[in-house]
Length: 458
Ligand SMILES: *Cc1c(COP(=O)(O)O)cnc(C)c1O
Image (cartoon, rainbow, N blue to C red; front, top):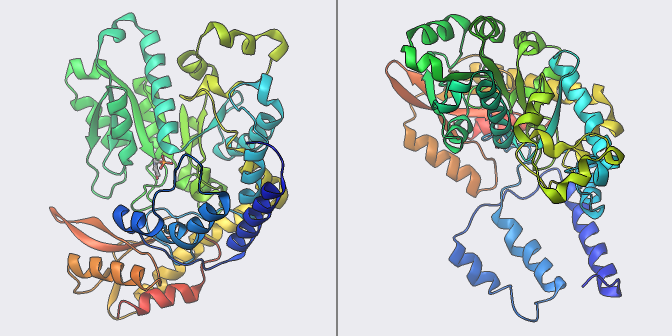
């Protein structure tokens, strides 16, 4: 299987050609899903005892299967949180795979983990956390949130033997990402949501929620999850006043910046994150706004030793990794995964190649595009902003449209390969209104792209 033969050389050239074509194509075809039966009809059974051959399988992928995917880096893909991995990062993702590096322990992965840690050092510096803070790359924000919250709970349990018998409880707000609730379920922890009118949590609301807790619930409370850039609206919780409350109440503060974390590098909005330097843990997704390919998240701890106590796996066959001779940083000790790809390497290469200034500029561009889109929306008769753009998110309304008109418009644009812009909801009185939403990540999105989309709402 691994013998180098001419077929393999040809295959490699084909793959490289595809990759180069794909990453130099700034407007890849905006594919859309098909039913599984339809795809099966088109390609047939692909796994057979003798194999169908690389050429046939690759052709199927290029001609049929990839067209049933939506390229997240299309400049008019402004739905959810899109992504725009840099070309350098994508190429280095291939190198990461080809190098077969085990990223769990320094003993095997030192050179690769060194690269990751260089990139991590820059990320940590953006947060302003004190000396001794550090982090690791994870598969994404969900895994980072879980790793951080497990650490928070273990730390809380270790403080008081009674806590071990309590079902733990965490507090967050209605702006928090769905993964916070989902991971609380994995941990068998309860979640109480603080309902904030503008999806913006502030210290006073947190304090009053804590004060209102019943005595037995207050005892179960181990952490607060604030958001540094809500996924829906780009809103940053008031981190400084939240940190005051957490300090006073002796609670772990986790700040989820999976989407917004890139903006820590943007001078124009950095002040909005003031207080983040007081967090106990932080999530940042390089695969969202730091131009990494999927998948790459990061979890950062103020005291990384606490993460080790929570996550370090023990096993007789693992002991060698922790030997004197293997001394170094072991990423497996600080998050939920053991065997891991050195998934921070593409980010490292891209940062090393371009420099951090280029990153700052590219992130600022997303924020600028949101402002420009806001102005364009306000200048049109049939459109209006629902709230001012925040980070790179714009919430706006097409006057007079019903929820089904937003939906039909989304599908029509997608089908025509024009754009992917999906609706969302925003509170209106006691109810929720369906509206439209842009999220800018790709610095190659142009003003003309915005015009094209807005024109289609006439
Ligand atoms: C996207 C997101 C997550 C989840 O991250 P994944 O990488 O998709 O697992 C968590 N929190 C916030 C705020 C997010 O935007």
